Image 1 (cartoon, rainbow over the protein chains, first blue to last red):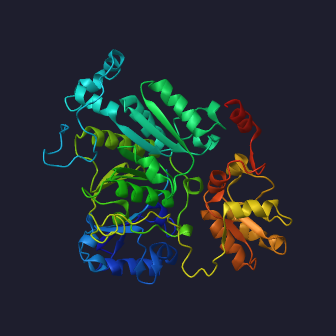
Image 2 (cartoon, rainbow over the protein chains, first blue to last red; image 1 turned 30 degrees about the vertical axis):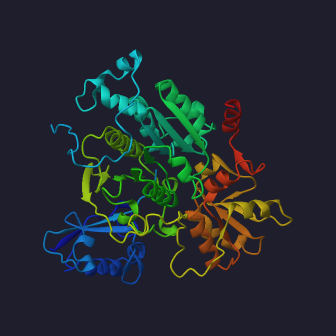
Length: 92
Length: 411
């Protein structure tokens, strides 16, 4: 499947299939995340506080730009785009 | 090679210390800091600026250890250290301030001894105990900059909020497994921590390094970058990581940089919230969790343990962690094996689970409640909070004989 690439933090990826990065045919950021949550529920539980509500302890970036500075979850994904999920880490 | 450069003349300094009235260097210091004096961007004035500077390092663990060593070596005049923990054998894989002989000693005792041996010119200020909403502003007020070397979200949010309130740069670093993050939060020049992560993840989604593991070198790399950023800010040179989050992936050996912006509606650094009183962040329980009494505080547990019907303590950490110190009378059942013991725990006295920080035991308590043990509870903040709040809690805190002996001999 062509399309965009999703990059997940190591800790999050391992709660799902462990694959990182992975490809998606989704056309928006929100669609890509929902698709991820449906195919891998354990991973979805980490990402979403409730159906459709992404936890605010994650930052989403498309090609290195925070989607809050783009169109949020409606930000479009195109062939070759990279959607990175950055998780807050607390270890020290 | 990209040359270092001073920030553009019009840019505001991130620290308020004036450039006049700086202390002179002694002859010994001129020799010691010779390589700095040879750097055009540091030179004599910069080194005097470092001598006048005051940096607060919160946590002397994986991140704080390398940061403290390099700031002391660099000649930062006053370094404040905040910690309440003792050195454990499992710290030595990454906490390079400490030696094997320090096991059982107070981290502040061991770290100040090591730093003083490294550079006796540096004034070391000990802050023994835990920072909270009631004391952090008083502690931070006399410092120019803070380096966050803590290991939990509530502390990180509290530190951010205090730094915003007092206008101090927060040199942030965090690690987990093979990944690290570094930034300098310094509103209004850039965003604060809450602009980046408005809310912490829920408690059950927060594995600690004790549970998830961390590559020993990782906090060394991240803590050293924090020290680099602190020196740059104190010297007023280069381009600090303000408005940028540096991501380090040790497995792929890749550094990435993300542009991060201020949130105009930030719940801390926006103008209308900047002066809000400080409050401590409590990690939310899992969505839909009806158990309001799932957690038991350190003081309440201490009273219950001294009462007529003490609860059964279950330590859900791994055997290696248990061996390094546990609560008196606790039974070891690692979280992964807890489900298999639910039947034998049912019908016994109330059960209180604990781990290092409260994350694993929270998950364990929910697991037991789902299995019908409706009174199972989790020690809030874990062993860490228990030791911090009740440092002299009778004979409940048991250490390995070796550690205990070394702890006593150090006093």
